[in-house]
Image (tube, rainbow, N blue to C red):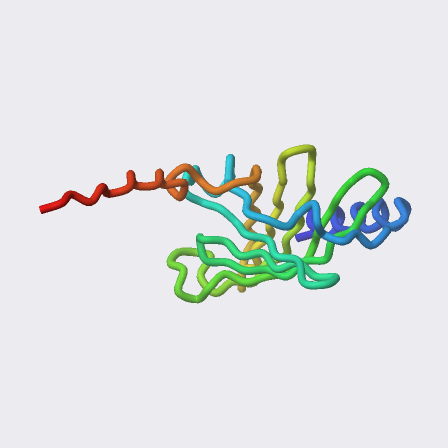
Length: 150
């Protein structure tokens, strides 16, 4: 726990010195497919980010949602906030609250999530995304059916 407090203090100091500027969130809005994750490989995982004024809502097809604020720090596009896993999700994440941060780096979106636990160490998840949906969701359009005269 002490480790996370120290990291949080360093991050707060860095961000306060960097001079935050409110961003409009456009760099984050859209659909993003997961490339990597410390929680395990998932070729069908994706998130959707929708802009609502100053806020962004993030929804995952794996059962979590978050609300984040977008900020610009120097040349870094950052969005940070909080969320919760659905209670219907099985395993250690079901119903848990978390803090989340997104950093836009070129064409990729990096995510860092820290899941709260009632007792014990927080669980952290890191993931990388790129724009678009997973291949399974890009279904080819069926060929048009030709009508035959009987």
